[in-house]
Image 1 (cartoon, helix red, strand yellow):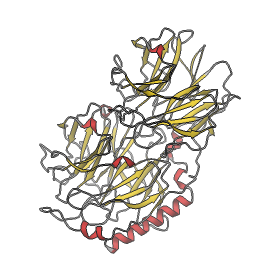
Image 2 (tube, one colour):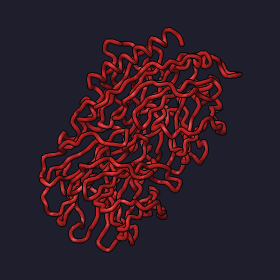
Image 3 (cartoon, one colour):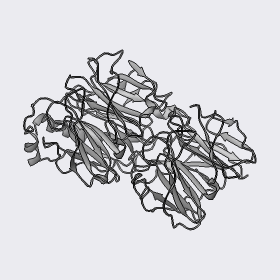
Length: 580
């Protein structure tokens, strides 16, 4: 490893230790201002301070310095060089909405709040590290909103300014990927995947007013991957490569061809057993050998580095840090975060609302009071609905015999609720327009879709999607397979758990159900989805019994028989009269 690169890792380690020991990981960032202080979490320091450490690559450094046979050696251009030192930096967002950056050129004050102009009004769904796409001095990022606006912004240190370009309609994709230079023309290209698995290629043009050419279909079948990574040029041949991971842990490399008419070659399996990572991270060139390396973060918050060996494969893991249990995403990761709900809520016996923010390790942060409204003891139910507006935070809905009220906005929601509706749940986007919807069940067992307009207060006329839903005692909704649509989990009075995969069509929103398992949890009082509690881009389930014991069922393989993993105890203390 070069002395320059060694110094960079040393600075990076010092940067992280300094900032995170000071508790800045969950300090109030711009995203916190996007919602009301009454129902967004307060800034808290993590109980375990995350770290980044310099890996001792040893012999692997010498191996990585060799170029692949037939490859052209050269400097790999960084895509997220925020401080201008020639290497990509780390940009991340926590589960509480704080966005931070790790530039490496200022060891005395290295970790900074990273601010995106306008984020106070609209918290973006995803941040994509594009690179220098239009010839500006600084790299550009792309921000993606919940309703499909893709915006290119030039960065300047710890700031991303107003959009230079805006495209609409991108909600049709569940992954938008900064792919690097796929066709060897020196420009930054994009890939985008639909929920049905079609992959499209957008060639970079270098033109700020029209930065991407029209889409070209690459191939189908990409829905089989639960994680897709725009890895950069891992083999040093000058063309960017793509890595896909199956839910069962097999890792496949799709080499870039350098040919714009057929940008990716057929896949080659390069590893197996990679289920231990919640997210893979395109780190660009960590060791200065001209080839793209990988990082990965586990469900316990451990960070590891894998160095390219130049032949399309990577070294085994090197310890790069610990304690990343409050992370939502790294920019350049292989997932798109679940939008609009990041917590579980409850109403206590006194009528006080509480929330617990999700953690990457499958648990929750300490509960905090959520709002000053005193919930009456009149049978009111809490519905914590996902993705209803651009806040990227769940809305507290009060459902009782008199109607439905959005307690987050303080407005009543129009509809024929009185005496007719028996169940309300809001797991996210059912209809495919990117905006959160509601599902309701009437007293006769019919299920309805109410399409949201993105304000949190207005919904289209209900669409009856069929009867028989009264067979379920509990209905939970969330994006359990990571395709961007809100699926449904139904639990019968006998504990049988069924999965209904969403289609993205409001008129026929779910495929035929299939039986998953019996939950074997006696005296259930709640089954709900808090969004993603493991940081893998898929929503999970929480079961609570009458004694206040909570159990986690993590989204596993949505295309196999094990949609959710076995129940894991989260302890007690969930003694609420209503849980959402």
